[in-house]
Each structure stands twice: as structure tokens, then as C-alpha cells.
Length: 426
Image 1 (cartoon, rainbow, N blue to C red):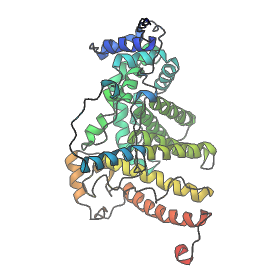
Image 2 (cartoon, rainbow, N blue to C red):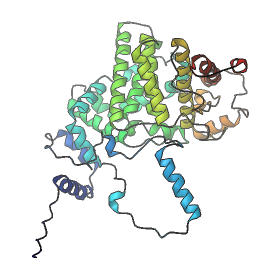
Image 3 (cartoon, rainbow, N blue to C red):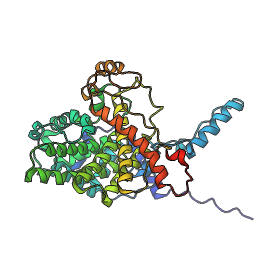
Image 4 (cartoon, rainbow, N blue to C red):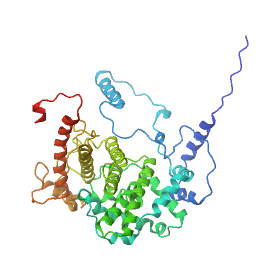
């Protein structure tokens, strides 16, 4: 019986295009040349394969976020640790390169995708056209929310650094080509993970401002603008700006989500967007409840609902303190809403372990590293200040204590299957 000839190997179109892009990605490409793509004609249609690094696609990113002890990675990690402790030494085996996590998309590829996504490009232009003028930063500092005093401390710096870096782009709002270029650079920055372990306040602020501007930062600038307008005399111009800010914040959240952003800055933006909406429309509306649920989802996804074991009482940092403040604020609001409207809370102390922030004044919180550490050492063993002053952190610590008690009460009042005796009620 004559053997049949072997079939000719045929490479699938998407695999061929993927290999071509992989070879091209090895060639160096400068960021300046990538940004010049904006002025070029629209890119030719491409057949995207499964391994395409779409910057706006969650499939292009490795798994991120918080994974608890019952998650699937925990099972593998426990098994691996157990086998390593019990079994004999096993020779390491080279892992095929195809199983490794793909590298982040190159600057040129990100820019190309942004150019092809006309919806995101137009949204970015609209947001940047609505950004505050530079002269508006000389208005009064926001005083509408004591819990966000740290925003008042950096809001001016964020807006100033944005104009210092992108003044040539923002000065001509009608030049959409320059705004599109600026939006593309912000998209590239947003795609990069934000470093959360900075111990220098200035370095922390610089990591998401100026040349490192992100869409979360742009949204925070809109929040700062809205708080500034709420602190000034109410007029038609102020009301117009305040009405536009929630929409601009929502657009920034959309663009940041497309880049896969999560973390402290993103959580603060989502949370304060819900607070701004409640000031305008009240706490009983469905949109506000959805916004609050989004803040809770971002809190748990980022793992910021469990901050007890992240650091010791007095060895803290600015990002750590900001995370504690935001986590406490979301928890406090959740208890208030559950009490106010009688709906089940979205968070519970049984599944959360949020450490209260240190009782520091805001000037120390956003000062240099040495000042921050020296002020932290002056607190008592429980984290309270000894000078007898009441800061926004002082009020937040008390509110968190009340919220924990309120959570116990809600558990008794709203539970449908619990059999609570007089001891639990009292």
C-alpha cells in the first residue's frame, strides 16, 4: 500500500500576522515616532488574531487585582508549596516560550490601536477640551469635603503640572490633532501600572502627573475643579461647570477602564464621582446606588478592603494612608446608605479589614519623606495625635468606629435567618 504524501504545512493567517508583528516588535521604536502616527492617514484594516495586544481589551492583560484565600490561584500556590516541602528536588524544566505571559504592547502598537478606535479618540478630545483653564487654579481652595483635604493639597499641583507639560496642546482647543496626540500619550501612561509603594510624597504625585499624566489624574482634576466651584459664590458659570464635571469624570473613568486601570487613584475617582452625584441629585437615586456599587467593586478588586496586614502602625507611607482613607470613606458611606434607605449593605466587617488612617494633618501627609515619618512617630500607640487638634483624619477615624458599630446593628436588623438573643441585640 503506497503511503500518502504528507500534507503541506499551511500557516493560519492570524498566526502569520502575529509572527510578523513579533518580529517587528523587536525593532526599537521611539515614543516620538509613535506619536507621529497621529498625523498619518488612517491605518489599513488588519485581521486581528487572538494574541493581538489590544490595549483596550482585558484579554491583552495578565490577571490583575486581588485574589483571596479561596481563589483559584491560591489553590495552585498551596499545592506548589506543599509539593516543594514534601517532595524531592526536581530538576527545572525549560518552559516553552508560548506559555509565558505576553509582554505589554509596544508604544507604536498602542498608538495604532488608539488611532483606529475613533470612539475613544473623540471622547479623549472632548474631555481635554473641557479641562479647566490655567487661571482658574488661583481660586479658593476646595472646602466642601473635609475627607478630601489631601486633594486640595495636590489639586493645584496636578493642574499646574498638566499645563506646564501640555500647555501647547491645551492652549488651542480647536486643534484636534494636538489634543489627539495628547490623549494618546495619556492612554500610554494609563496602560502602565501605577506604583503603589512610594515612600516619598513628591515622587508619588509625580508618578501620575506631568509627563506621567493618566486619565485617572484628569478625572481628579475635574473633581478638584468642581470642589473649587462649590466653595465659591454660586453663579450661572459655576453651576454650568459643576454640571459638566460629573460627565467629564465619567468619561475619564471610561477611558481609564479601557486601559485596565485599577488602584488607589482609580478608586478615589470612582468614589468621589459618586459623592459628587449625591450632592447634586441626592442619595436615594438609582444612579447613585450604582456609582456606590462601582466604588465597592473597585475597592474589593484592588484588595483595598484588606489593609490590616499591609503595614505596621507607624511604618506607613503616603499611598498607604490615602488607601486607608479611601477605604474607610467607602465603608462609612456604605453603612450610612444601608441605614438611610434600609437596603442591605454591600460591605461587611466580617469580610473587610480596613485599618484606620493615622491622625495626621494634611500638610504632614503631603510633605517630604522626612517630615512625614517624623510626624508619624509623634503619634501615640493607637495612631492618635497628641496635640489636641482635630484633623480630617481624626473625624474619619471616629466615623469608621461608628460605622463598625452600625454594621453590627444592621446585621441584626436586616438579617432574615438569624436567631439573635438579647445578648446580641444589647
